Length: 232
Image (cartoon, rainbow, N blue to C red; front, top):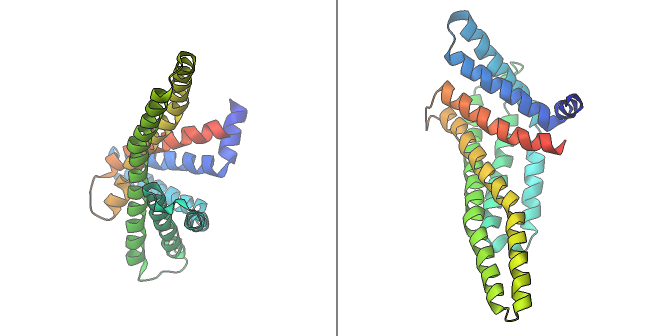
């Protein structure tokens, strides 16, 4: 257990999720605190948010690399392909615009255009999460139905009793194999739905407050952190 925790905290993704969890708990604590205690929790929340920005500073490289890979594929005519392209393009622009204001956030080089740039960055973040959510919902609804229809059609074409029985066994096996994929899609839908609250609140589109933001951050962080924990 301790060795596993050590591997988790020494991985970049695991450490970032740990800091995000602490930040979300500090955000919740602000709601139930007053006076100097609330100021301390607010400061901790802001400093943790700034620290986490360094973990995603070069995130635009991976995002645009994914965009390049999608553009070179033949499957760009599909709806999932276009949703992925839009998602990673928006993520790349979000990371890039956010990076432009890092010196301002560190109080190293203050610029008058920081708020305008961050507003555009958060807008692209909202769009990226929306496209990710749409892609997961599409895959959950339509991919599963297409696969089920294909399996049913193949099953009907089997006329020999032995083959039909074999196909039935294979269908049950395939359904069991598809269960983790379905669970992953549902989990991603929940994570994206929770994360959408943050840019929507920052943009003033949905002023939910610190408590809702903190609770949704805790849920999405625990779900994503759990998957990282399994991998390390």
